[in-house]
Amino acid sequence: MEKTHAEKIRRDRKSLPVKIIPLGGVEEIGRNMTVVEYGNDIVIIDAGIQFPEEETPGIDYIIPNTAYLEKNKDKIRGIVISHGHIDHIGAIPYFIEKLGMPTIYATKFAKAMILKRQDEFPHKPKIKIEEVSSENSVKLGQLKARFFDITHTIPDSIGIIIETPYGNIIYPGDFRIDLDLKGKPVNTEPYEKLGKENNLALLLESTNAETPGFSIPEAVVHRNIEKIITEAKGRVVSGMFSSLLERAVEIINISEKLGKKVVIDGYSMKAGIEIIKELGFYKPKRDVIIPAERINDYPPAKVVVICTGSQGEENAALMRIASKRHKHIKLQPGDTVILSSSVIPGNEKSIQNLKDNLARQGAKIIHYRVADVHASGHACQEDLKLMVKMIKPKYLIPVHGHYFMLKTNADVAESMGMPKENIVVPFNNGIIIEADGERIQMLKESVPANYVMVDGLGVGDVKEVVLRDRQMLSQDGIFVMITVIDSQTGKVRNSPDIISRGFIYLRESQELLRATRHLIRKTVEEATGKMHPINMDYVKENLKEKIGKFLFQKTRRRPMVLPVIIEV
Ligand SMILES: [Zn+2]
Figure 1 (spheres, rainbow, N blue to C red):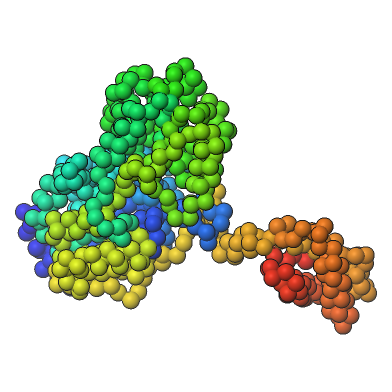
Figure 2 (spheres, helix red, strand yellow):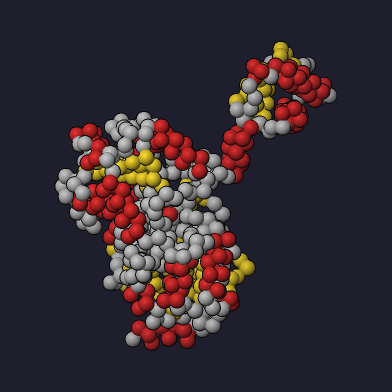
């Protein structure tokens, strides 16, 4: 029955391809969101945020641009979610109303994470959310969604199958292949089973596409951490990303087994563990987890701390512990700190700072270069290859990552014999990819995909000019000159006042200030001398340009120059 229906659609709309449009996640890490469109039906896969970059100072998040979806909101049949990480669900509160409150389909755990995040937006209308699992399916117009279990770092992660008349579009989301301690792939049955179906396209993550081999088995990481906890004579403090909830649970299990107590610190880590407990994914013995204020009730060798802040984030728990700002947790010689994460590029300096502070307090530091105490939750090259081999898709579309990562992912697939013309590397966010049973192509046109920024409570109201100002201020500071002008004569009264911040130290730059004041007076009076009445806007512009140029000649810096003119 189902099949004949699909065939009928295919006959009726032979020329109608399936559209795949990545709205985010193909030019960056994060902001993952993909649109699958067929005829009058649109299904949205994931809706994540991206954390700010150097070029976007003062911004909280960057979210996908949903202009195309807003225009086509009548076609939206639902949002399907692969897992509860913020780079896959974080953008939901910002746009769901604009899309007409479509139903969200998520697993039990992802649903709890989405609802938890929604709590931070109490004034927004209630979202519609339905629980799904690898056991059920959802009809979404002419499309249909099914799910398969995958391994990642957070409970209840699933891959998504979108059935189209031309075959399945498969999106595993974030994943890694499960390996046993001997390095043999296990739990691959769902993928192998799926490989027997007609799979049109595989949307494959590229986060670790540059890393050869398999990802380090989480089992190895657990074994190494267990060894450290077993041998520790003092406290063990394990700093990690709050997204690594499965590892956190494993550490609680190990501690429980060894008769040690666990303190969990850091808002997002606590919240995550709380949800895991509530949903029954994990049931700790009642008194294993203790509050931080009771840490001194136990001998050091009996305590394990799990906390956030392995990247040296200034206000995260681990940094507060390291810099002696933590209310309850103080390090002492003999304590061991495990940095159970890799170094995210750009964070090198703050991590060094963190390690310095830890070492000063006599703690022994173990990080991923010393021992395998961290494994990424993302597929490396061999994981990717195995996935392609098992799913056997007709077409491959690398997603999640910067363009060069996507390209590397494509190269890996090509190296295993996948025809080049069957691989499409999305050129930019918003690009439209069309596929049918015969071919796949990337169109020349894109839908809007430029940055939408969230700054405090505002969405998308941070214009480029604001960012440019912030960049300028952060690089070369600000230079304000206050000039009093006689509106009748155009002469400058008194000596101009100068205020500067983040530019030069005024007290040591008297010579420069004198010269600048002189130039201000000269510039103003040259301009006003020929004018009647005086056009103050012109005077200001002129002043800004001349003084800006002068300061650059003298200092090689470009502070933001602000002329203030007071007419008397
Ligand atoms: Zn993830």
